[in-house]
Image: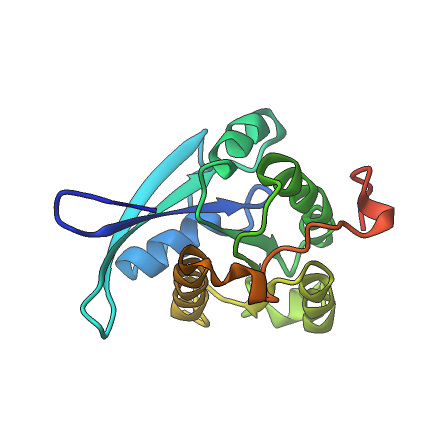
Length: 201
């Protein structure tokens, strides 16, 4: 976190997850309150910002680095993780494979960062109830496994759009104040034994 010429604190947030889980859609919904039913896949990295002023008049500029989920772009994502202040990690509740990939993404984060910092797990498309392939309880259990906060969201119906980024910013601020050691919601750096080699869940 650093300051710009406008005396704003700069926050870098990385979105991670497989293709088509709604990372780009979430960023547009949160930063511009727009939703596109059909969205072109991100190629490499996009960056979108949003200015935030807290009740204490402290100003922040959030930069959302929207990463592609394809394997060929994984190395780019890992380089971004090293300088991230926090991460939003996505899966699609209608796509079991995107949920099973969370373990691999978590190991990649661990390998790249190797220190505690805030991560929030998001299960997107909770409006598609009849197509659900991952239960909410499974999402909660996965988040608990890694010590992350968890939300189910819908970019389309604007469910839980503000809350994850607000909580992530709060956790980043707390971390920057040196209180991260008491924050149980940071990533659990000791990976479960069955995932230390990157095995799926």
